[in-house]
Image 1 (cartoon, rainbow, N blue to C red):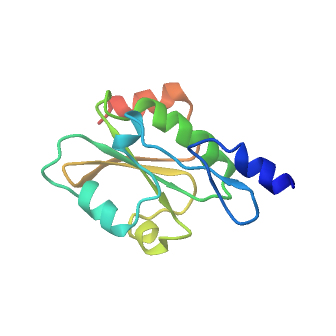
Image 2 (cartoon, helix red, strand yellow):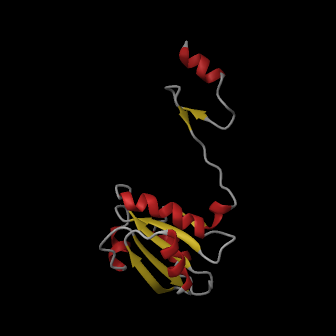
Length: 139
């Protein structure tokens, strides 16, 4: 009975599993277009190592279990995107350990700035918004 009520009252944007539990569908927004979240090695190579791109890419190496990463990523999202001079890419170190090792990620969070396909700057650990803006000013 409950499942029938839930199914009849479901919004148009949600889909349901056989259990009757809603599964959220996500839509891309204008801001999310220049955010490359949970990038794999192919996406990393195509965007961060692109020598023809003059727009710097901040690569946020993170892990799902890292609490400072959970606080830093939204701050980075706020200063990057289509309206800014920077793009953001996030890379999960648990899923891509070879990529993290290649860029000497030994602590989390680690943010590496790429411009024209080369590393320009890097910081390790949580930074507040003022420190992030100083970091961006050095690129």
